[in-house]
Length: 197
Image (cartoon, rainbow, N blue to C red; front, side, top):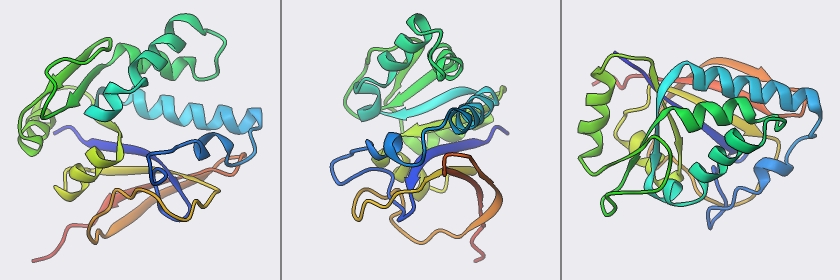
């Protein structure tokens, strides 16, 4: 069975976005040194390459997510994020929506079915693993339904005081690995601990 992996940027105080969805802190936190950037890009590429399908929420799909990465993939070969952009542009992407039937984006499908049923069906299909990118509300639904098999949190060395969380109830997670990068970001990989009845 394929795993559903979540990759999210998060602050040290546990928020994935500011109160209005702001993520400007992702780019200003930590020292932006070339080696640290290369390390974090390498992590992103390795994780994305282990998957062949990306899941995103409607709000993220309706934003500039697809067009941004397609532009980097097609027009910015010198951009350090170019290898990741190519994967994002070329991979199958599924946006979940209760209202839209089409959204712009290369290799992007829109799914209107029941979230748990569709994700379970995707997990049972052959292929590589599945990667979730966001946004906060969509990921929160996946977390609450216990659909995430592996959590990859990119912890940024910044606190924002208030914002959006993906956790709406208690979740016990086991730390599988932790990797610190030169510019101060840390990637923590967690696995959910099954709740004993």
